[in-house]
Image (cartoon, rainbow, N blue to C red; front, side):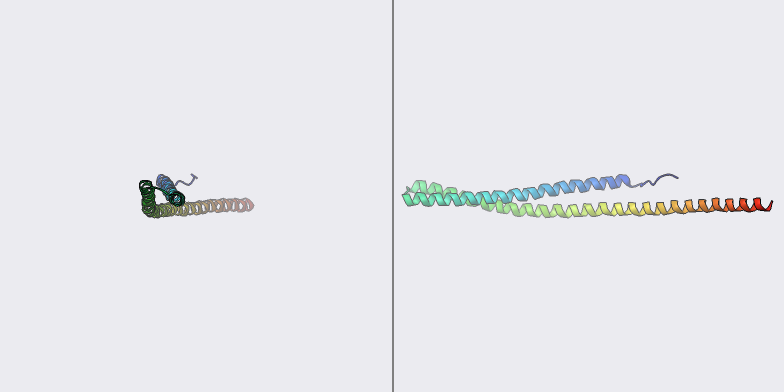
Length: 152
């Protein structure tokens, strides 16, 4: 008896590949969100440090030009923080899309695997039924020979 062969195995392999690609894309999107969050934290720390430095400079006295330069730097850092926050929101949306795609790919692959397992189970049951019939025939033949040998 030949072994079980799943005719849709190439399709299952392709779905596994698509799931793996979706998993990698999701991981990359997750890392992008995490890196953006780290950048926001870094910019906030920079901003806080610069504010403290400006307070020290102002306490010691500073000319208007230098104060304006420090103030412009702070504004630039604030703008960068806002830009990063906006970018993080966009990256989170992309991450959600990637998660949905991964879920879809996983469901597709799992459905194909379940179908394969169902066919394999049916094949196994069919093989067992055929083997049982063969064993029953062998048993019947043995019994028939035994009876025919006894009557002779």
